[in-house]
Length: 254
Ligand code: PGA
Image (cartoon, rainbow, N blue to C red):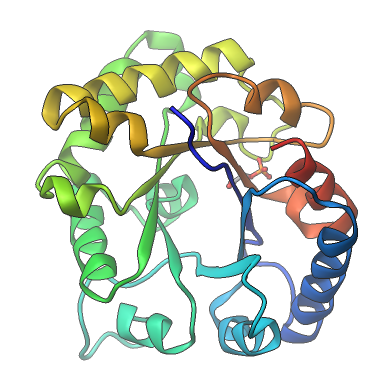
C-alpha cells in the first residue's frame, strides 16, 4: 500500500507570533530548494499564530497548518478555550487531538477525546489522534491493552467514512522529549497491531489506508530508519521541529 508520508511539526508552547512566522518562512524556503519527495508537511504552532501563519502561506500548497488542541464543546461559557469553529476560521486544516501532554496535564481521557474527534470532523478539520503508553505501562506489559482502548474508546464509534479522515500518531510517552526513541521495530510492531485492530473493526482497506505517524524524539539521525518501516507513515516532531534545518532534514527522509 502506497501511503503518502506526513511530517508534522508540533511546536508545543514555544514561539511568539513573530518567531513562528520567521521559522515558517525559513522552513518554506529550504523545503522549496531541497525537498524532492512528496511528503505532506504540517506545522502546528500555538493558537495565536494560526491565522497569521495561514495568511503567510496562502497559495503554498506544500505546507498545511494545524492546531495543537481544541475544546470538546461547540461553544459557550468555557473561558479561555478555543473551539473547532474558531480553528477552522483561521484557515487551519488539522488538529492534534489527545497528545499525551494533554492527557497528562489536562487529564483528558478517551471518552472526552471522542467528543473532540467528533467536533473536528463536524467542522471539516482533520484530526491527528495521538495514542501511546507510559513507561510504567510498557514495563508492566499493560501497553497492548492500554493502546487498544485508546483506539477503540475514542475512535470506534465513527463510521468507516468518518474514520477514513483520521491520521493517527503513536507516541510512546517515555520517548517524548527524552531523547529515548522506540526502536524502529518496537514502533512498527505497535503500528501493525493498531492496523490489525482497525482491520477487525472496519475492513482491510480502511486499515491499509490510514496513516499512522510515529512521534517521540525523532531527529535527523534516526528518522530514516523509522520511516523505512512498513507501517510507519511519517512523524510527529516536537523538539526538532523548532529548528528549520533539523525539521527539513527529517522531511527529506520521508
Ligand atoms: P519530541 O516530541 O519530538 O520532542 O519528543 C514529540 C511530540 O510530543 O509530539
